[in-house]
Amino acid sequence: MGKTLLGNVLAGVAGSAMLLAVYMVFIYVPTDSAQGIVQRVFYFHVPIAIMTFVAFGVVAVASAMFLWRGTRAWDRLAHSSGEVGMVFCTLVLVTGPIWAKPIWGTWWTWDARLTTTLILWLIYAGYLMMRNVTASGEQGARYAAILGIVGVIDIPIINRSVYWWRTIHPAVLVTREGGSGLSDPRMQATLGVCFAAFFLLFLWLLFVRNENARLQDALEDIRQRVLARG
Amino acid sequence: MLAILRKDLLLELRTKETLTSLLLLGLLTLLILSFAFEPGSEVRVEAAPGALWVAVVFAGVLGLSRSFLAERENECLQGLLLCPLDRGSIYLAKTLANFVFMAAAQIVVLPVFIFFFNLTLTSGFLGVIVTILLGLFGFSTVGTLFAAIAVRTRAREVMLPLLMIPLVVPLFIGGVTVTHKLLVGKGVSEVAPWLNLMLGFDVIFLVVGWLVFEYAVEE
Amino acid sequence: MENLNFLFAAYTAVWVLLFVYILVLSRRNRSLEKDIEELRAMLQRR
Image (cartoon, rainbow over all chains, first blue to last red; front, side, top):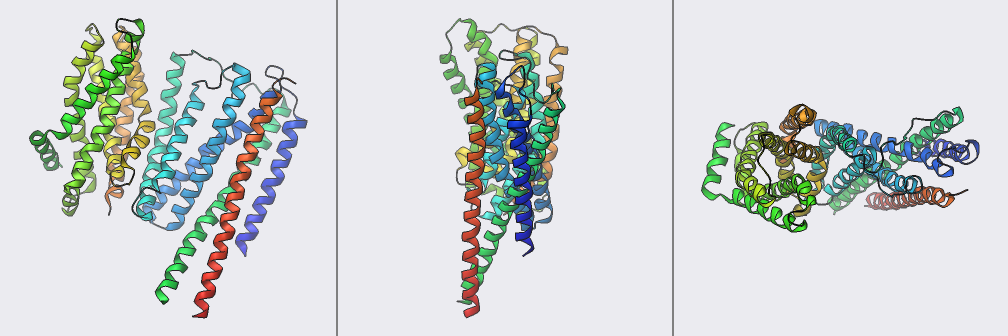
């Protein structure tokens, strides 16, 4: 039962890291002088955002491998990363506005990073939906893979264009701290721990979701065998 | 590839289905957008580039969807696939054909746009035309690939816009920004980075589409 | 301690969403495992 062991180890490590992270965010790190207590959202918001893009990277690589090799395992990995990535993406879009409202007085600013994340969310949505609207699962997997690859190539271009667009129209906000301005080493340490915690959380969720996909395929296999037996 | 391109163009010349769809949809979108803004107001002039590109995007998405649907109904694509043809060439031909159709539709839509939004023709307009062509081409590269995919799904009316609109955001933002700048008389140097971006987009996705199209049409 | 509500809302949202997702996944996994066992048993009986 190697799989269960791996799953439990991942869960344990991720859980411990998360506990440490929570402690550091709420107790250890000093309150930011400029933004006050709400600034602590940042310590979760940023790592989650990074993981969203990492997840999509995994989707893209797995998609390419799937198109190239055709093995189900790659498709399962891509699908799992897509779903977990979608969860993380949703969290970014939820925590972002909650952070923005008290700081800048508005729920949504069209700042480059958040806008790109919004577009990424839509691409994720298309990616996941693709698998449900095709005639066969095989087709759905292939089409989704194409979208994954095209999407990952497009994201930097989208980011660049939105960024340029925003610097012409700095209507809402010109400056946005998003990782810079961390003078205190305690803040840096906290951010680092949070990065690690969410990375491990991502790995664990990816593992669990992938197991889910693997079991589903296995179930289908067995079902076919039972039906064949008569 | 040239043969397919010729066939697509000839077919279109006879039926004019796609062309009419693109044309009408473009005009209708412009019309409804005209109603969104007070005639003669400042807002209207400011919004003009946006209105144009919205019309381009929506007409494009719906028109592409239409053209692939018609093909599927006539099983043209099946026939094409039976030929020992390189899938990449089919993609290139279709992309080019779609581009030509969309560009042709713009020949009518653009003047109407100028009338509806009361624009004065400046020298910048040549640049606007170039930008539109860049945008339409990029649109066609992504659109041809995903229309081929979307038309084989159940929710095809929703899938193509859902896929395309996020992906062509750079073209849209670039197009609107450049159109706006050129119409207010800014120089080419100011819009050059945007044009490079759009050109880059076109080239990159033409290559990607060419590489990946075979997976989209496998049965 | 202004804006404590926002901080609370953000973290609650994160935990709730993650928790629900993990719950859903675990439940699905367990039910899948159960189904597979049942079918496997059926195969062995035949």
